[in-house]
Amino acid sequence: MSSKQEPVVLGKIGSSHGIKGWLKITTYTESVEGIFDYSPWLIKEQGEWREVKVTQWRFQGKAVVASLEGVETRDQAQMLTNCEIAVSAEQMQELPEDEFYWRDLIGCEVTNTKGYNMGKVQEIVETGSNDVLLVKANAKDGFGKAERMIPFVTEQFVLEVNLTEKQILVDWDPDF
Image (cartoon, rainbow, N blue to C red; front, side, top):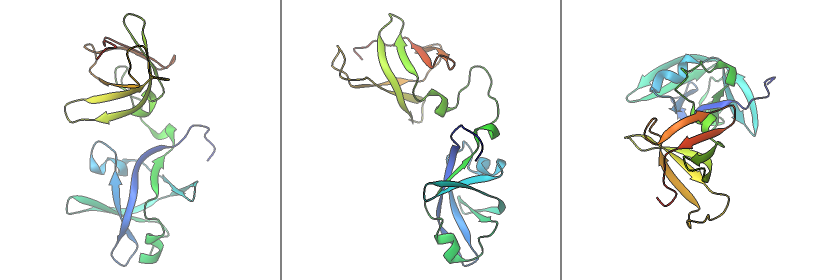
């Protein structure tokens, strides 16, 4: 890969499906079929990314299965079980100014309106009602907290996101 940016993981290869090399696909995209809007895929085998092309895909019940170029037997498909599926960062579409990819929020420093540094975003958790920032402090802070969960609700709790500075301003009490 020529890009210096890490690939963006969009899913994972599951088990083989049938005898002709089809694979079950687990997607992390908003819609299950959204992963097929991207081509080519990058799959990670033994720590290395390599490019692959999807030749066909279809729904199989509520799941999706795909056929990859050069994968024609069950044995070849089984060798790819649990491989991550990604695309180059350049393939990701530009988002409107007030929307963010989760990967861009990871590592941002979170500060509240009173200037209190709460730590860095470690991950984002999907809860159903709204996404939640898992913010981890460098150590237990003055409030006895090693981590906090802050709802990603813009204009109410998340007031400003500055990706250039990797900063997030929140209206959140450090005691909570």
